Image 1 (cartoon, rainbow, N blue to C red):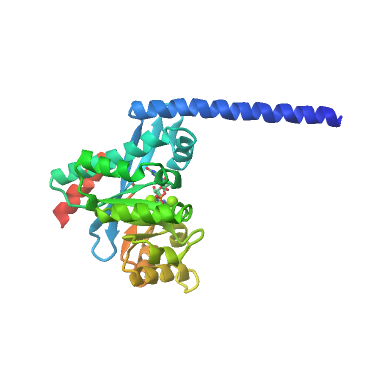
Image 2: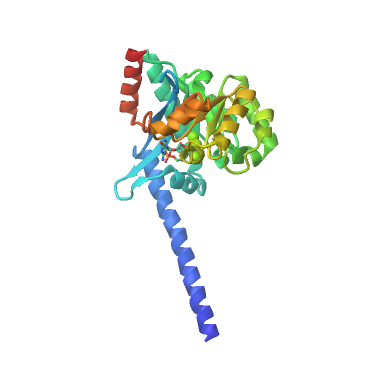
Amino acid sequence: RAKEQGRDRYRFYSSSMASKASLLLKLEGLLRQALNKNELSLHYQPQADVKTNVLTGIEALLRWSHPELGQVSPVKLIPLAEETDLIVPLSEWVLQTACKQNRLWQEAGLQLVPVAVNFSLRQFHQPNFVKMVMRTLEETRLEPQWLEIEITEAAIAHNLDYALQTLQSLRQIGIRFALDDFGTGQTSLSYLQKFSFHTLKIDRSLIQILKDNPHDSAMVRAIVASGRSFNLRVVAEGVENLQQLEILQRLQCEEVQGYWFSRPLKPEDATQFLVRSRVEA
Ligand code: C2E
Ligand code: MG
Ligand code: MG
Ligand code: MG
């Protein structure tokens, strides 16, 4: 019986592994098509000054809309692409598209804002990352100061020397860096000391637990204070309601991003948003 069970188990594993491999292959094909067939797009989420409501930046967020699969979250899409070589053209496509879009807004005379682009640990550690970024800026003719690259602490911790070099080369030409999802994982103040970030983004999970008591707001208070000490721009992510906004104001956090101010917008709608923000300014 044990033998039979063992055999069954073996069969079970091998068939599920085979189906995982074939699923991956299928998804790789779909993703390849997506890159060629305009199924990918970027949505843009505004960031704003808490006091004045003035637009201070805009984050590009990847969207994949497949005819049958529907909307595939970037949280699934990026790791999938990372299992294949498609991560390279995907990184380039995202950066190209975001820089081109920002350049178009600038040429239309709209408010100048930095566009923030996310790079995963593996994307950041791709060989030629620096070259790819520089080439894309040249091709799209976007000045470096209007690009902000978002990475996480994990991407830095993975290889400190590489991260230092990479940040230095790109900071030198004027590109901004944001430390994304700060306050989760192995949050380390020493990174703020060692690396010249421009922006610190407080993770949504810390904003969602914000209540009017000192304990729940302690992390956010500490991060805002750290940001100030290191002369960083601090952006609270995932601000959904007025209560959170008011607490953040009291904690002297100066900038927010979240559904309260705006959802991520399709390019056309983001353009309209920029047009309106010019009228109101
Ligand atoms: P992130 O960089 O921290 O982006 C913020 C996420 O929070 C976005 O989810 C955004 O839609 C969502 N969000 C914004 N405001 C609110 C709010 O008020 N409430 C709630 N509940 N959510 C809010 P999204 O677009 O699903 O992206 C998830 C993550 O996927 C991103 O987190 C980022 O890590 C990654 N991602 C997105 N686009 C790209 C990309 O082009 N490249 C890479 N490497 N990663 C990307
Ligand atoms: Mg981000
Ligand atoms: Mg984030
Ligand atoms: Mg995140």
